[in-house]
Length: 530
Image: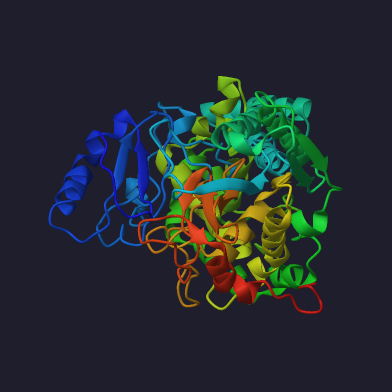
């Protein structure tokens, strides 16, 4: 069943068949809105049962429409409603992984709109995060094993708890064999397939006379992602030229070199307070206890709750938390962080590791906490705060400069620039672009980021292999007429609110209008933002 929408500000659900009955009422509501209504039309597509895509629309909350799972957080749970029963449904696709979510390309049902008559593509500007990877450090497994060992010494493990050490060791063995922070087989495939889709979508760009620039941050997982992408790009067309630029950390790994941002991250009192407030929510504590009760006996949970131990340290785990001794919430956050990369693995017993220890509700809540940290530290953050994304301005300038280079190339040999980077690049860049109802919603200082008051989701903003693509089109009869379309994770999205497309129902923007709308962000201070 497909319901097509007329407005390009997408709210797209790809719902699994098993969730169909849950959404019957929503479908009826949407159907009723299509008749005699001025509201946005929505498109609902029943697709692959193992995946879904969601693009928020400003109207969804007022219409009572919620994203499956991500908005149904129940903050009213009390101690008597905790679910300590064994987890029977251990399917990784039924869990939430925040920014560690593996990439889901658009389904075959999804179609892009056609460019206006007379316009042809002349170049593409591309930015992507590396593909699915292993853990980038041993912090989480070491700290989790310290907690486990403490319980083991006191004979306070449950039957499931007895399995945890072996599971961690198997999980980390596989991580170590692949390499710390390196691409898995899935991560390689994500980029290879994406490269193949790009050349399939814009075949006219990649001819024997074409040249495309490629630049990375220099990190191995990023360089490997780039190589896999290029292998997919050249699978069916290999005659064009590839110009490899020197790795550019200043452009694509800027969070490490920007002193203003580093100072903000370490000293800003508001983000510390907000993240701590979320971690201290009663719902967080209750669900942490619910997870741990399956692993440890009650006496040990009381020990953690009281922080009545001195042989565990928070060192190098969570610099923004500010605590020195872990409690029950910290223990679950470590467990979640460790197993959140589980979907990157091929073997089912490793891929389903988070699903073994977290039920759907629990993974949803701890994904929310992970999202909150990403949101405040790298994303839109608190209203009036720009330090989290100001550092992405040179990258935006690079996009515009590269477009000008393509336009001014009379031979039309230069057909674009491919950039490969990190979540720390994608998230600030998306925030800087202010994509309506997607990456533009900063939260008031007197509120906290919540799923029911904000559409920002780590799984949609920066899953593994997240990508932002600008397609550039030129009028064949008037070369001065240039149009730009933006794809986010290969689906059409709008530019910022004050940027007008060429028509109300179009995703295409005049390049001059784009420059006007983003002009304040294209001027750098003398310090080049440190």
